[in-house]
Length: 319
Image (cartoon, rainbow, N blue to C red; front, side, top):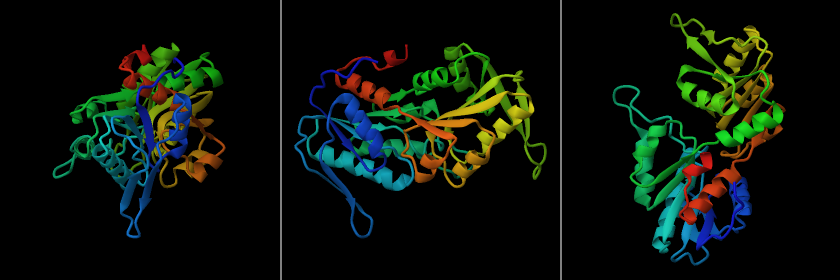
């Protein structure tokens, strides 16, 4: 990635969801955060006041819609509205983790497609463009009627795998059939083979049977996923791989949602390490967990923002 150079009329503004990542992006771009007051009234209504002139500026709002998802989403929408009414020239919503992405289709009768609703809300609030990372489903780009860039964390993950594991005797593993495309793309970048964990439940009430497609015996296995939430799938897959003769198992995921007892589950699991990016702010439990490690996507997002500002190609980041 090229070093951040000139930025024309570009300003950054961060909500409260992930200040650490926003500051790291600001350091990469050598830009300070625009002064703004993003706070709550006594009844928890969100209030936003921008303390600097932003008229005619190219504004980038950095805000993940992670837990608490609804609060962070409302912050994003209200910041966008404030900027629009302050006559910003262009508003780009930078959403490292796009919440509600798992609700991208009707899963049964009378259920919503919430990802589309959230896309509509962001557009109606006044965003001109969206920048996000590893959408759960690629077709969500089509839910927006404004330009949407979906960045891939794969280059950052590949570099970390090569730095920490090397590529000798590696086997990239998809923890389920749905993630095969993602795992195959990573395996291709690493020049490694691919295996798949096939989960089956023969009868209701019986535990899942894990079949491994591919020979993992004696291999260093790398499980790869976009989101780790409860951690159950990843931990069970790691156990199944070790039972099938894998030498050791590490896991990589772009978004460490890690809700409920996920951190304790990962800490007690047979995973050598669980690596997530900083798209979601780390809780104290995550920071203290000995086998969870975090890598930064700030340079990746910062470079994409610089290219958007200077009208350069974003897709060439991944060539």
